[in-house]
Image 1 (spheres, rainbow, N blue to C red):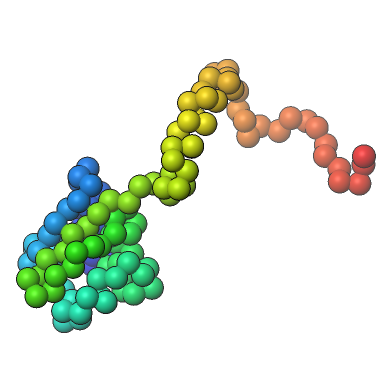
Image 2 (cartoon, rainbow, N blue to C red; image 1 turned 90 degrees about the vertical axis):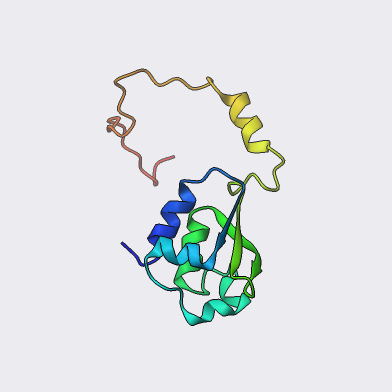
Length: 123
C-alpha cells in the first residue's frame, strides 16, 4: 500500500462532483504530514509527473482546482470518464443503439480454438 493510497480510497468512495478538503483533513486521512512543498500551488497541479500524490487523485478520477495554500484548502473535482467529454454523449448513444445486437449463448467460450488455420500467405 502506497503512502497516498488512503486519499485514493477516500476519493473513490465519494460520488460528489466536488470534494473539498483541508490540508489537515488530508493529513488525517494519510496518517502522515504532507511534504513542505504543499505550500506551493504548483505542487497541487494536475500534471501526473508532478509528484506521487498527483497520480493518486487523477487515478481516482479527480482533478484539483481552487487550491488555496494560504487557507490550506483544496477542491477535488470529478472528471467525466474519458471519451465522453467531447463526444456529447455519443458513446452512450452508440451503446444504447447497439444494445442487444449481439447475443452470445451461455456456455460459449470465446477464447476456445475454432479449428481454423489462418495463414497469411494464403489468399
